[in-house]
Structures are given as C-alpha cells and as structure tokens.
Image (tube, rainbow over all chains, first blue to last red; front, side, top):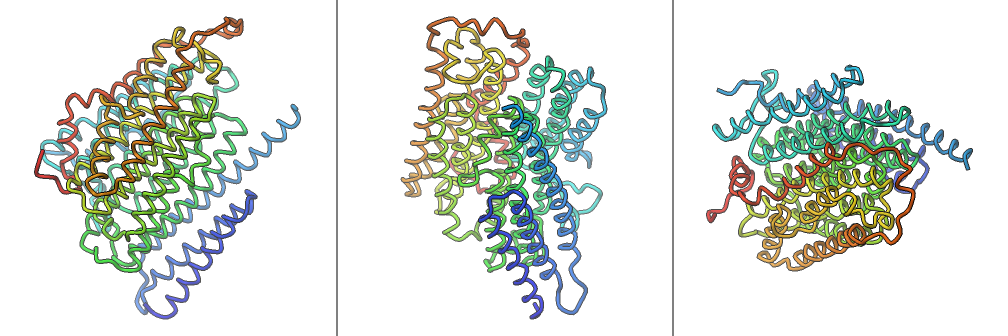
Length: 98
Length: 498
C-alpha cells in the first residue's frame, strides 16, 4: 500500500462520514438523498483507492463492484426522486379535498 | 447425474414468470399465476432429491468457477429456506388471486403490478439462499429491496408512499455500507467466496471493519430495532398479500444472509463488542416491538409491530454464539426454525387479517367484535398462527425458542433467556387482546354490514392461509426430517448426541 493509496482511501472515508452525518442531521428528503449520494461517492472513492496496487495495473474486480454500486445508487436515487414527486402530488390533492 | 443447470432453475423460473406476468393479458393472469407459482415451487423437489443423494451441490453457471465466477451452492440450510420461500410463494400467490380479483376498476392497474413484483422478489430471495458470494448477496439484496419498495406502493396512499420513501432511503444507505464492507474484506483477502474466505480468518483491521460494516448494512435491511420506523406503517397499510410477503419473507432474508456470513466462518472475526451490540439491539427490539404492539388498535398494526419484536429474537442468536455453547448445531437450527416458522405464521396471520378486513370492512379491533362468529375460518387461521407467534408447544416456533433459551442458560447468559421469555409473554398479551375482541359477542347489530358490496369468496383465500399456518405445526411431528436436511453440509459443527 503506497502513501497516495492511504491518502485517497482516508479522503473517501472522510467524504462518506460527511454524507452519513448530514443524513442523520437532516430531516428534509431532498437534502437526505443528496447526502446519501455523498456517502456513496465516498464509498466508491475508498474502494477505487484500495484497488490501486501501487505500480502495477489496478485490480479490476473492485472496479466491477463499484460500477454495479453506481448503477444501483443512480437508479435508487431516481426511484427516490420519483417517489418524492408522487408524494407531493398526493399531499396537494389531499389538501384540496380537506 | 445432476444436470449442470439444476440450481439455476429456482432463480430463473420465477424470473421468467415475472416477465410473462407482465405480458399476458389480464384475464389470464389469475390462472397463469396459479400454474406458474406451482411450477416454481415444484422445481425445488429435484434440487432437494439431489441434495439428499449427493450431499451439498456446487454449480458454476456459465462455466466460471470461484474465485472469478459466481457459484451457486445448495446445502441443507439453504434447502430448508428454499422450501420456506416456495410455501410462502405458492400460498401468497393463490391467496392473492382470490384477494385481488373483484377489484375496483381504478385500482386494477396498480394491483396488476403485484404479480411481476412478487415473482421478482421470489427469484431474488431464492438467489440469495443459493449464493456464497459476498457481492452477489449485495446485488440480490438490492433486487429484494427495490421490489419491496414497489410492493409497498401498491397501497397507493400517501402514508404508504411516505413509508416507501423512508424504506428506499434506508435500503440505499444500507446497501452502500454493506458494499464498503465487502470491498474491505476483498481488499484484505482477495476473495469474495464465503468458503474460500475460510482460509483467511486471522483477524486484521480491514477484515474486522469489513465484517462490522456488512453486519451494520444487513441490520438496517432487516429493520432491527432502531431502524424499524418505516416498517409498521408500510406493513400495516399494504394490501394483505403484500404485507404477508414483506413481513414473512423480505424481513427474514437479511437475517438469513447475516447468519450465512457469520456462521460460514467470518463470525470468528467479530469482536466481543459486536456480539454484545447485536444482543442488546435484539433484546431492545423484542421489548419495544412487543410494548408498542400492545398499544395498537388495529389488527394489522399489531401484527406489524409483532414483526419488529420477532426480528429481535432472530438476532439474539449472534449474541448467544459469543461464548462456546455446548451444542452450537442446536442453537443454529433453533434460529433457522424460528425464522422459518415466524415467516410462515406471520404470512398466514396477515392473510387472515386480510380476509377479516374484506368481510368486516375494517381492521379496527373495537369494530371486529364477534368476528369469530361471522368469520370462523379466518379467526381459526389467526389462532393457529398465534400459537406459533407466542411460541407455544406444538409449533416450530416453540422448538426454535426452546433451543435458544437452553443455550442461553447453558452459556450463562441468563439475561437473554429472561428476555426471550418476556418477549413470549408480551406476544401472548397482545395476541390475547386480539382474540378477546374477536370472540366477544357484539352488543348491537349495526346496519353498516349490509351496505357493502358482496365480498369475495372466502375459501380461495382461507385455504392457502390455513396451509401456511398448519405448515408451522406439522413439522414438529416428524422433526427428524428437517433436522436431517439441515445437517447436510451445515456450516455449524454437529453435536455427537442426537
């Protein structure tokens, strides 16, 4: 493990912690989904950093895992935002009824 | 000779059924779903026959073996869980055909989405039971969760949408935390296969952190105590077949995965504090869920909080392994039986609650008075399921709890035994409240009952529900059969005494 690996991995962990913190602090749905994505970016950065093995070629398997993780995170975020829009619609129609 | 594609069937067939359920025209769905679910369940039998003849089966789909490829692996415990998923799959499927048929015109499109989501859940759950690969567990867990979000949304209310939002957020974060754990373990060992990982069990900071992160991710997915807030709302507001899947199957899978990871060897890496934390969270969940279930006024809410409580029981098994038990195989089988019997019983209970809701027009306990006279079948199913939820003797739940309490006492963790007994007492209390209402005669006949449209036939819903409820009682009569299946390739060392 080279020095730069450690620096990048720790930076990734730091970003992930920032995301986790704002997830726990914020109640607003929109802020929380941004925070969850920040957490995701931190996790991916950590894994990319650990996959680099010094001088030689990087280990491809963590890259495959990260790629899958990104796909899941992006589609999950999309689903979340769609749900949020749906909830706004439902709430406004309920307000009209009452 | 075992065909090399045998183990892909339990995953591939439900997936194919999901696609067909999307494409077939509506009048055919009912018949198709009944046939399809039976077919998916029947594919389990050749797998189990092969298991009994040849021992654990390992297959490489696409010809790629570990460590590069992803293997499918069938041993005794996964076989039992396959049977469990098949029972729930067929039971809920047949029940839902009867439940959804006379739907109102506006809700039909949404109900139509139930079938593909239900088949996808089934396929993903089966693939979880058959995998040994840490990363494949991640992918399948995400599939289960996304399908779960869709299932919650079938209710369509703003409350259900809010619950789905919360669940989606939690499950996304849980997946990322789990993924980080997998990455750390891979980085430390260069392996993702649970069996190959057994060669790398000397503790190291990366591995320990990886195991802790994977555990944390799966705890969030399982809705263990502090992460349970979305559960009662989602499970109680959903239509009955959806509640049965969510509470019966989806919640159980996260526990199954965690036990697979811990018991296949990685558990030795866990520091004492992790064992104790799991025990504390499990105990808190048992008591908190039980106490809140006592305060609910709606039948489905009571059942949903009961799930919060029962999930707590399952996680006590990780606290109990912290000291050497004289009989780890018994403890492990106890937890497996508890997981399976809770899934089946809770599924049956939600199905019975659905019948009551359709016929009585409500699931408010105060309005359900005398329901035992009008819907004796549904109340009977609920009663049989309750025997199991309370952990009373002739049920599989009793066997599971008994073995867990015994190992708690043998290992000197009497506190956990007390919690287990207290939890049983609490579930007795909230379930007796339900029966007190159902069995008490109604004082005045209200006229509301006559105005509602004719409810669907009860038999189509009650038969599958009764089947599931009885499935928690019958295995006790010949317990040696599941014991024998469970011992094949079991990750836990077998005791010499029978």
